[in-house]
Image (spheres, rainbow, N blue to C red):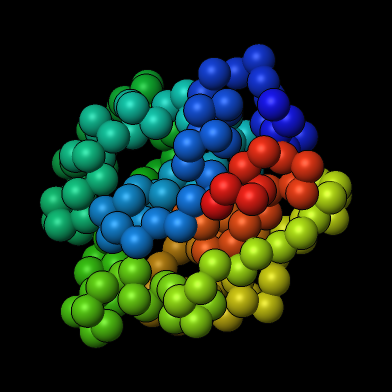
Amino acid sequence: MKRCRWCDENSPEYVAYHDHEWGVPCHDDGKLFEMLVLEGMQAGLSWLTVLKKRDNFRKAFDSFDYNKISRYGESKIEKLMADPGIIRNRLKIRSVVQNARVFMEIQKETGSFDRYLWAFVDFKQVRNSFKNPEDIPANTEISDRISRDLKKRGMNFVGSTIIYAYMQAVGMVNDHETGCFRHGQV
């Protein structure tokens, strides 16, 4: 079974993520928020670091419940900063709280974050046909537009490169390599 070359087959976390999540279209607001948090936490780090801490993030951030997270105050932020199971970066932790608030504002405005997000791709997955990993872009015009809009609304850790990785993660784009068994499946 051939996988994308970025997938380290010696890592069960990578294999499970690649085979079951990455590139699969997601329309659940809770999951979309979770992936937004994880992609922001990954900035400057390896994705494997985030995957290995995913369960810890889930516990620390109330199962990614954006309603609860939007109400976090300084005492909760300090508690998170003391949690060795997560990435303890104050700016990233504060951005999760801020992003939860903006996420809910977008839901109120558009009916759902899913509707807001998928409108950028006309509600259809962008199906790419990259043979080699070096051909896959780090960002696109669409990720640039989403990033600009989210920043304008007040979100942080949503640069175009992070947003393109997010788009790949939640299946807005299918960037599985053409030789990967998942390319035709998602």
